[in-house]
Image (cartoon, rainbow, N blue to C red):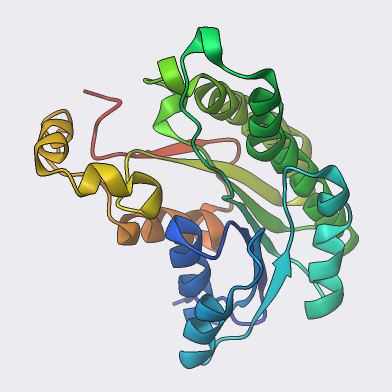
Length: 253
């Protein structure tokens, strides 16, 4: 039987791969044989590189502030030049900025859209060009959010960008399917990562939030692994343009 989750010989790039969900996905792909490119704006990513190398994986770090177009330009080509090819791109980089609508700074809006939407399209386009040049085939996975479906208010730029990401995923999938490239998205709910550290340190707030979720718990980083492996592997060859919600049933409740 084919081992769908053996990524030996594959090259994967993960943006925002130094911490949180991005790190978990990058490490798991490396554990399963992929050569892994970590993209982050941090000065270094020695800790995640050590973790990957400690399990026998191969990884490289590419520093880039994805809010800046000049730092996004040619980024996937750098990955290809380093590893010789590119098979998987996970657009995970992002952050939350919360402010009232009437006070939301336009400069902040521009930065939010640049990171959460513009960079996703640009890197997807770069990756797709490489994949087509290799003869076709490849996986592009966008990391969205349940904010695209059920939340907003103070997260107006974030929720708007994540809503647009659903449509972008569908459009890219329709254009690239004929090249054998699968484009899909994962929409996580609230996960136990540093971006939600304050919530998880507040027992009362955490309990209140968990009561809103049918599974009665919020996400742990391990919960992203199965959906990611499915969309990154040959098991999803006939899946195009879909957004897989991973939220314990929150949006469906």
